[in-house]
Image (cartoon, rainbow, N blue to C red; front, side, top):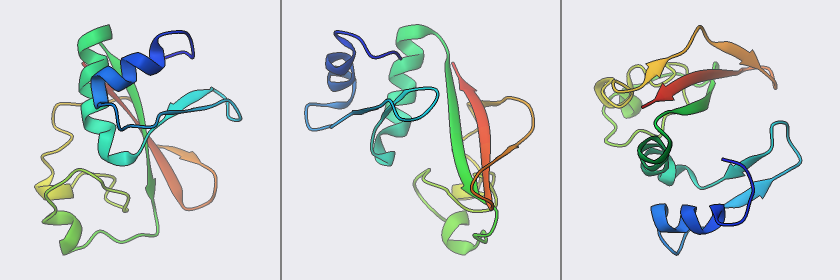
Length: 117
């Protein structure tokens, strides 16, 4: 979602008045940044508004997947399972994985690309 008049207001409408979206123009591509707890609601709102959303999630290759991840009730996963075992593996079932994992810096981080419709 580009930076233009009305988009900050759209984010507030979708996520509530208390959210503080930040426009980051120091990275390529430029992007809006929000707190992680808003990811699922934002993705669903964007998919309803625009039909399809590309989502890039970063995971750690050195953080081991354990019982805390596998029995979690929320979808905030950062560990080596890349969300596949999070909460029993049910959170990403409606998202389509696009291609294979792509390594991104710094070392020990993996990015996974999903499309949510």
